[in-house]
Length: 325
Ligand SMILES: O=C[C@H](O)COP(=O)(O)O
Image (cartoon, rainbow, N blue to C red; front, side):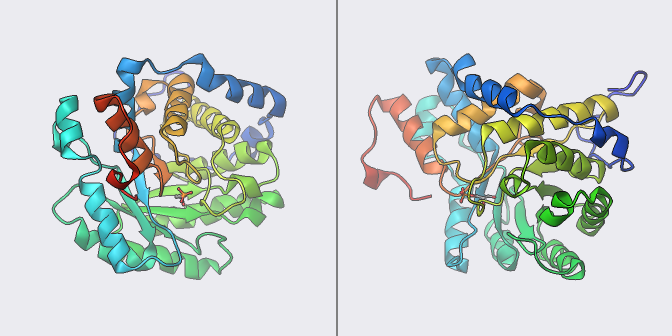
């Protein structure tokens, strides 16, 4: 944080700052150093067995429980919302001594046409609905349509909006265009929190990932998110490392904390723990909560529940006992 700058109150949103091209020019990424560090992260800090259940429950509270499939129906969204209300079987929580009301997912994430179904299904809970808007996943529609999608999602009750950036702005180095686009998204979101999806695998270089991360934060992103889940490669630790370093840099210079959301292909409890370790190592305990960390996943919860069951009973439950979420 710049000298003399006030500490950001914990709940204050990042308002964004003017685009600073000089700052972007300072971004350098040494790919092999990043890959080396990312490879050692999981090994550096294995979670002790007695803490594993607590870490897994923490991962659930940071989970954006997601369904983003072509065959989504109101019925599948309602089932997902029922799971969001009770992500872990009562008897497991009881055995772990954790009150049921303490464990809820962070959000339910759906396509924007299904927002109203999810909002209705989650009524009476604090769980927000997140909508993927702006021409998800490719973002290849006109800006006016993107803004209209955001507005429609907000009207339908989404309290969080996951937007995709135009990869072309990054690939052509048009940082002003990227800044203006994300700024317009943020204005359209209003009070809804905005997660900016970088689709990192389509940005060509890790330096581009670092620069795009900064531009999105300068334009007022509440979160930066790795992937849509639809790219050929989605959330990876090297990309996460570059993004957490950008978040740290942004915090040190502006005093504003921005969150990270890895998403796409995170299906095992072990991978979820790796991401928690990355956050702890790179950004500290301050970031280990749903205000600043989310995991976007459609198929992770069942493995976490399986591992919790193993922790409690000492053996894995038969497959037919595990939920299909
Ligand atoms: O934003 C979330 C992702 O689309 C989820 O991807 P996934 O289905 O690979 O877990």
